[in-house]
Length: 306
Image 1 (cartoon, one colour):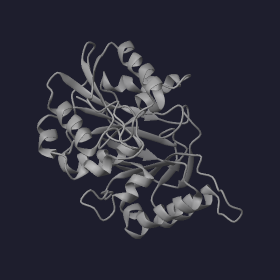
Image 2 (image 1 turned 30 degrees about the horizontal axis):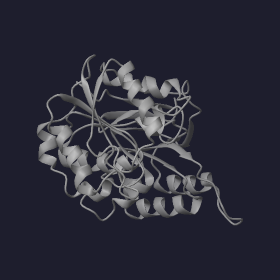
Image 3 (image 1 turned 90 degrees about the vertical axis):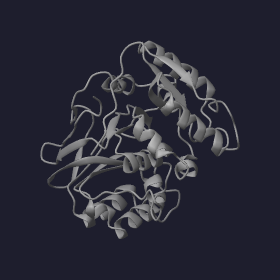
Image 4 (image 1 turned 135 degrees about the horizontal axis):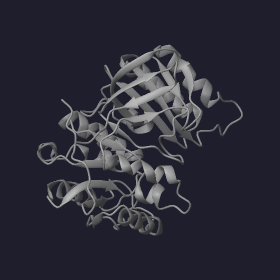
């Protein structure tokens, strides 16, 4: 059964951590100012500004930040500063019982996808796939809708995504319902064969990615298809595939690759959602009950908070 974290209230404290790569410091500074604008206080992870190659501190330091913030009763939510790489390195060492006993809002995307999948499947906690402080909110000219999407953390309300937000297209006709799962395609494919392999059975699958050539997207979708992950989903939602362009003369287009596997899977599918490495970036609760309809081109997701 899904566990919904408690909503935020003005004056609450959110933790800011970097469980993957070091965030851009100037962007993060602006992102922290946004947290204050929301009427919230913040507490910074100890390894937030550390640099260990492409990691924000060694595995122990990043893991310790995650554990400490879930354990800290003064912290009401945990928001990731950015993605990059590194969350899969700590997944097998996480104390999931600790998280289950201290459920709270956990927010991020991109490399954070591995943690979304691991935490949900080990604890049942609903987590949030949404824009991060340094990667998105702290960038100059951050999109207002990316900022507005944080409002879902303060008041329970069904998320309704339709043609008023972006140009949505039908790939495979039909309607579907089930918990919304998924995130970054690269991280979903890297979960295969591990104890945290993405479970799509009876669920609506969200997929997005960035900076991957069509042949790389082909490889990862083929892996999910051969493993039955696309076919087991009740429906598929395609988010943004930012800069996933061909870098060679001989190539299939991204659309050709995606449509090949989505139509092979034969599950109701829509593309064009502003979810992922894009602006605006609309946050959604993963693990929350959802339904989709290709005729009306809508996605509805139940609130992820109490």
